[in-house]
Length: 317
Image 1 (cartoon, rainbow, N blue to C red):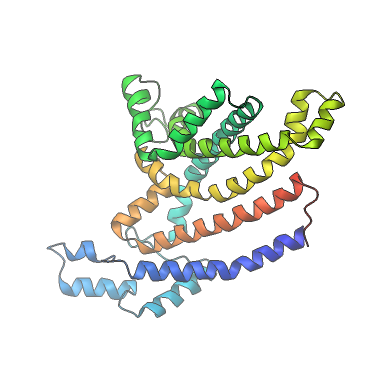
Image 2: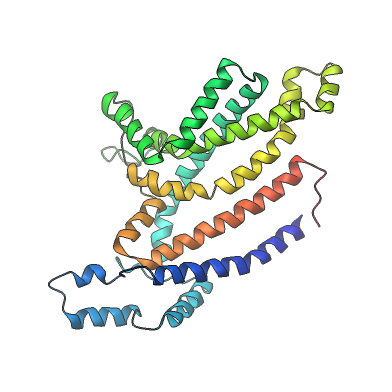
């Protein structure tokens, strides 16, 4: 398995190189640029704008800018923010813990609820509960995440006053475990709502098929307790399709974090990406795009490795 993982990592290098080239090229072709906002400043002269463009290296050809950026990337220098002048890794590193906390909590909530709903729907197919989960799934998959977040804020923060509407902690008391837990409930549930809907349907469909297999009937005929048959024998195979979907969806949590962190003023990388779009801070955008690509590659690798644990018939060569 170790050799397989190493080979997959080496195969990902050309893919990440292609992502870097394509991302850099797309950003170069975007209308406007980092100097657009400065150009509309009546106090900025043409000479000052030209000097800033030279200092940032924006007056050089695109391929020269790319090789300088890529060379720095390989040496751990991801560039400097056009807005605050700080290294890109410093800006991203300052926001990374908040995003990882939000993504991890959202993933935990999604997994627990999706597995619970999926198993209960599979063991009681076409029941009132199953129809209710189906309705919830269609609702979760079809509604805009930002709208759902605003509705949760309106209900639980404005009308009921049970939960805070924004930020990661109470500024009056400062960061603490209970304050953080209080603030993360709404963002985490908003981030995971789509996954809960989709994953529960995948698990329900897969588990219904597995329950009908001969080896499940054999286990039941031998007198194995029904709960053990479902949770031990059937779940092991039923989880394989779900693992594939989860591995592909987990990197999407970063994309969803852009919306969720903006709605809830959560100080993470998603909000940083949104702010960098408004200010045309290209180094920050490129750094976050590379991190997102690495998450996708890592998610697929983890999925492949988990396959071997769930199904011993899968061999790696």
